Length: 602
Image 1 (cartoon, rainbow, N blue to C red):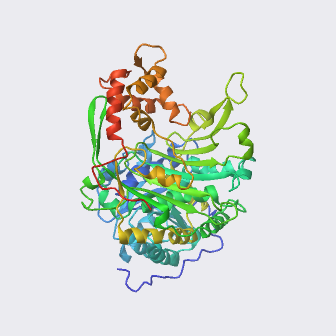
Image 2: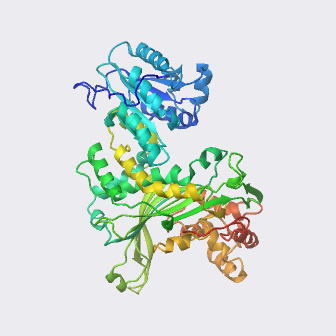
Image 3: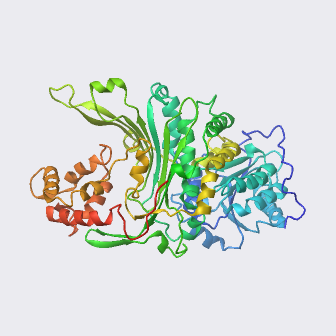
């Protein structure tokens, strides 16, 4: 054990020549703590390969770097690399693997870090070097690792030491304060790089260019022009056997307090003096200080239940959250949550920011949706309010919904239209880096502007901790919703309390026609342009367009719709298939779910 080592060791002070731009010519050692885990396999090793060999501008970090995986138990190196680097793809994979090593040691033993230091020094040549440590481990061992690195494994004189720390950063204000005391007690703030990989996503990064690189948006970016903002995260997956872990955190800790909050900060903060670490974090903290803690009054909770539907004529079943073997049978852990943040400053006062996140829904999607306020002059040409949508995933895009005159004689005959900037069409062949690639690169370059500061986390937990304490203590019954719906029952009404209207999905639209054969036939005939009594993918695309904000749906989107209605698997739809499929939709996607308890929303 670390024994007499204090939890608040004096910080290692860098010598004057050790700046954030310390020479990239020095040997670089990258240590992945928790290298046997899923994150290392799925994201970390592939990200490092891309930076060294794979991306168009490679190498962005030196090819001479060595990558040491750290774990508690010894491994067979060849078998370890075969498994953990299975997602590394490219012609230089063999060369990359030759840079990858493994070191086994304890997280809480000083001797392990002394031996790690010897291991790293051997590959560095015994002189000055830079060292980058990635913490892909539970927060319970953050403190021991920080002490171990600080005491025995920091970079030798002349190089820098930087710690990339993966979330979660505690469970609440209390646990974060304890964790922060240890990490910040051992290392300076500019040596700590707390990761939220959402900040490495292209569309999130583009918030900076959108707001501050253009003339039209920032002048409209306030309470006089914006009615509401939605920040949305949806998954069409359940807990996939990870229910035990998820049940200890819930959707608010897992997604909302970190990913969605960071997107909000970049969307809503005041323009910083510059885009360096200190200026950006100063404005983020100012914004957070203007937000009152969230209460149950401004919160909605749900939990997905089981559901069954047909896909290409085959029955498909999805288990409910409580069916996950790792989840207690009486768990009330929310898998869906919505909260409303209210900012008390001159720019945003009275503008609701609706965060909503959930698993077991109808699609995988993340976006920021800004709805503008109708103005007095809009009475001249009435229409739907403008919306600016930043689609984070999938199919990254930024688009603006506007009203446009239809061709014809009437001046006031208008219809919604879309100004659409899709990354795939605007930047064909452009390289879209994974968030972890950018996190590694920015930490290597000493750029902390995209990382989460200690002050931000203090304020973020101040906002969310009272709500989380209330949920943990009172365990309110979440609304049970069938797997695959757009939102749980009651969510539309909750949003409407804040003046927010959410559009229906194609499934809901068709399900509403289930009791009216004539209405359904009218919809079918309007889509059947060639009158052959069948809907092909092109004709179904016209239906889908209505529910994708008027944008062109992808072939994958269209295929998903056809699969839900196609009984014989031929890729087209007869009216009989649509009729039977819609009857099934009305049962399986109904928000009026009677197989489990429901609850009031606060």
